[in-house]
Amino acid sequence: MDTSLPLPPPAPAQSPDFTQPFDVLVVGAGAAGLYSALCLPPSFQVGLITKDTLSLSASDWAQGGIAAAIAPDDSTALHITDTIKAGAGLCDPAAVEFLAENASDCIRSLVEMGVAFDRHDGELALTLEAAHSRRRVLHAADTTGRAVVNTLTAKVLERKNIQVFPQTFALSLWIDPQTQRCQGISLIHQGQVVWVRATAVVLATGGGGQVFAQTTNPELSTGDGVAIAWRAGALLRDLEFIQFHPTALSKPGAPRFLISEAVRGEGAHLVDTAGQRFAFEYHPAGELAPRDVVSRAIFNHLQQTESDPASAHVLLDLRPIPVNTIRHRFPNIIQVSQQWGVDVFREPIPVTPAAHYWMGGVVTDTMSRTSIPGLYAVGETTSTGVHGANRLASNSLLECLVYGAQLAHLELGQWNAVDSSSEASVPESEGYHPEPTDWQRQQAAIATMRQELPRLMWQSAGICREETTLLAAIAQVEIWQAEFAALPLSQFLLNLAPTQAASVGLPDADLAIRTWSETQNLLDVGYLILKSALFRTESRGGHYRVEFPQPEPHWQAQTLVQDHHWWTAPISALSE
Image (cartoon, rainbow, N blue to C red; front, side, top):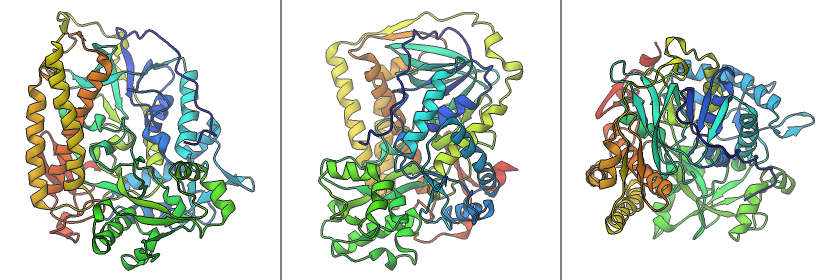
């Protein structure tokens, strides 16, 4: 990977004091979590929870950039129009307007923090990406996410009111049984289950791409925030809409490294193995059509032209782009391609679609509030109404910033956790110490689910979906969910009473429990995606049903999910 950008300093070693109450706990340390923590009032005591390290997140992998209408020939109105058009009729116009109108302020904030966006003649450089009508995407070479995250991380580590807890995993929300308000969260740290009180909790855990066998997301993208919120009873929306990025590196043994859409924006051609620019057969914009269109074009073209489409690929040819432009704009893509034996100056890159972004998530309003009092969410974990059925390129980092910025207005009011008293009675702590052979059997069961679920999801809820395979996949996931719940470790962890401390006596306990919890979350988000995909009997945006290949007017509505209930609502219903 490109290492030209300096990595942020490591978080300072500290002994976590989980006994103190926090004003706000932020779960997740990508762009959404970091920016949210920085935007919170500096008088608040903030805990930043990350299951890995501060420098590892899906935002860190983001290449393309951040969209904002700041050019003289651009306007907020055009940005709104492009976003709504890409969203295939399901964007909330008020949410899109809110995003576009606040974009320039957030860009200004990042520049003032020191994010080194590329410049041209002293002005911020802008590039074009698919489905944008103007060049409005700011970038830092092809590692924009890393540039943003590194800067935000450094700022977080300077803030004395923010305490960082790396290698700490969120298990479940702590809901007050009387008020139904979120009052904290349970965490795993160094083999201990601890309950941490907070006036407000912000979920910023990113997406769930690891539920699919082919994904551009890092290993930590396991849908944790959506699963945790769902189990607590939060309202979710539009979970069937997955954006499959059309151009991920396809080489044996290589991860599905994303080849940025900006490459096509700068003039790269998408061709088949015969050299034909086939994308124009599927859409007049060819390579610059919306992502869902290009992904299906590749999928359908391979189905028609290849004897083994599952293992086939198409080619992304960068050679139409001037050499100097490639060197300046895409150094990371050059380097990663070279690592896997592809010289982009002499040959095209083999690519296939892969799961990239989840448009659905936890329903939030413009203040980032969820349906559970005291619970907030920011970033890919959410459904703000901005993306609709298909996200416009480079609106994702922007959404993290615009909606994270609203936490500057968070008011604690009467719920100030720092002033609250401790629990009247604390249940005795428990310990879990299984026999080695029993734990090995549980590990084997968990490993099987973790391995087989993404394959099942890719086959049944990937680019093209149909009823028979969806029903079979739902039945299988329900079997796995029941088997998972019956595991002795599950019985122990899922039946802990609130505030009940516990220790887990397992080899490498933190990794073991993280694997257990991520598997639970993946099973839950897999179930939610499958059920939502079955529920929507039309094709729209990132959701394509073989039996219902066209959008239907009566389905121009949002899919709402709470507990095990699915229903539809008009697009503006939740924002009125």
